[in-house]
Image 1: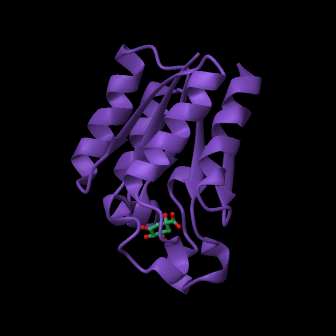
Image 2 (image 1 turned 90 degrees about the vertical axis):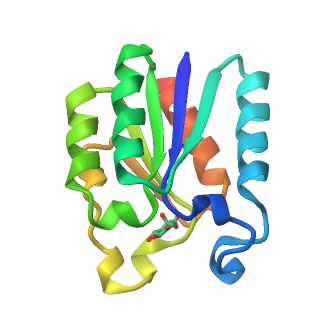
Length: 143
Ligand code: DQA
């Protein structure tokens, strides 16, 4: 079982950015939590983050060539704008789950549209970092 976790723009700023919404834990804390969980459960995992939309497209495409079994993706603000990320997911056809740390459904109107959700088999939001673990568990049981 091989999982790729992709985080989009500003998620490298976790712990600094709007802690009232995203908490005080850092991106490194998130990666450590995911890595520990995967190690304990015999899951191979790679965590990637970029602030650039094209990089995120490249990561999704690479998942196909690396024979990744599942993608966990938090596209950050690109959730609400990016047809390119949706097309990339459709292109590779790898099972994917969308994760948001915050409860996006209770936030601004402009956050209510998610392009990647049109592809992802599930959207998990408002559960903080635990949402990533829930997404990995979901993909793991689906395999
Ligand atoms: C986010 C929610 C998005 O609306 C926002 O742009 C982010 C983070 C979340 O994890 O809650 O950058 O994806």
